[in-house]
Length: 200
Image (cartoon, rainbow, N blue to C red; front, top):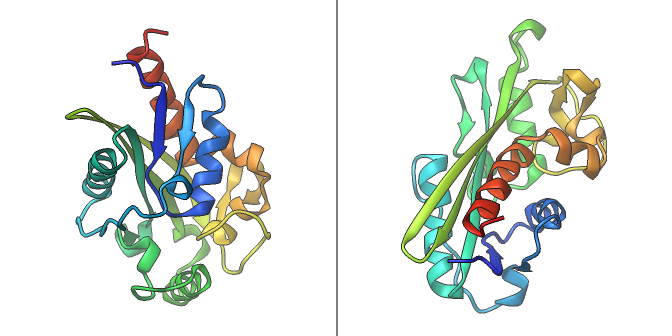
């Protein structure tokens, strides 16, 4: 099967922007939820990033009738034994805003010393085509800051400090972030996989 059309299986506009930017290297037509406004939401009720990514890709592939790409991403904080992890987007509650999630995390780490604030963003990306699902993973290590820095990015980006560039993710341009982020690492692997599938 040659992939000529690809559905980005997420309702998060920030994710759509990042993924679409990186997929420009491929000669395929990209669709998003904006092209299918009547698609039902998918409940992310699995207890792992892998489970959510596979579920979203599989179900949206059935709805959209095309190859579908989904991801689930979690921020895993060492001092919190990997939390918030799969619950990152709803850490402060089911309908929590980015700001509320960040506030809860900073509060929980208030007494954590600077040398124990390590964390990683981890993305699991799933590609569903026909009855087959392929997955890849990307990780990026960093440190949780004590206060917000920068105005770009989304989610936990303002408090995720990336030592090699001496900036938080929110202080990076989209181009900079798309060279080193967890999602970029996973998507680079996925692009290579799609090229292989397409015989490139």
